[in-house]
Length: 219
Image (cartoon, rainbow, N blue to C red; front, top):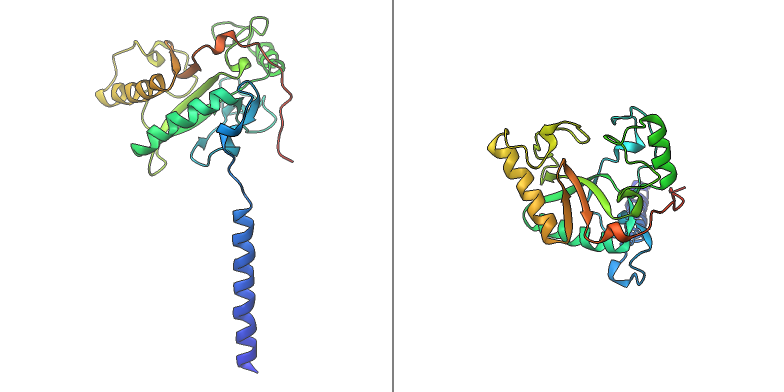
């Protein structure tokens, strides 16, 4: 009787493991090269598991001190995702990966942010819009193989001269980290933003229209 019970337990364990593997295999990573419309908005997490996400505006841990995003998803235009995937591939080959703080921002949310902080020194005026509203901007940093974020000298969204690419009163390590991030991003068709070490725009994305795509949060 004990042998029968033991055999049943082993079979049950194998069955559960098989079901687990089947469920894991059902999570399909899509091929971005098959997306024909380069201007369509897509969720980057559908195309890679190799990014780290810390979407600040989906929490109150930001300079606004208020949650303004309904969920912590990263949407971008297909062409932006393609370039970002290639950049991250280069970082991965060197033992690092991109950490994402912010991606596409619908104009309606830009208006909400402007209402909280109506100051163009900190928030883009929604009448004009920003590259974030066009799906061509990302706010990023880097983490190493252990998940530790590289020291970039300031926190994300630090509004001071120390956050500028042109500020040099920093340690050699911090300057090297910023240079490393910038060099790889520029190689992959992104443009840096002088006053913010974390902000990168896809080349030519300023020509895209400001968008107010409805945020597609998972159920």
